Image (cartoon, rainbow, N blue to C red; front, side, top):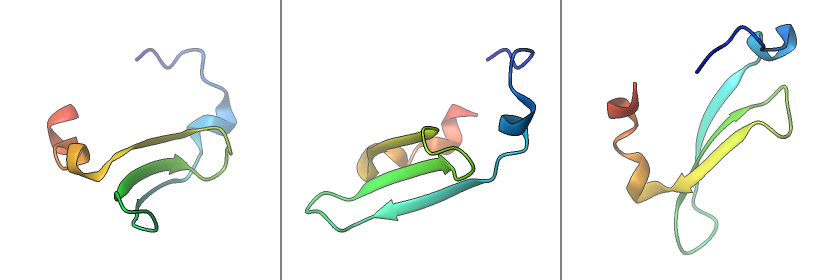
Length: 54
């Protein structure tokens, strides 16, 4: 992903990883906590291969 157009505040964001197990199906959430609209959520069973995405 090109980063030349990124806002400087985004580049300095703080990223967190969490597993939400409040529902019947666990969900993985990766979020930039400095921006309410910057997150990725996916079923936990599909997220166990995140290291392969690098």
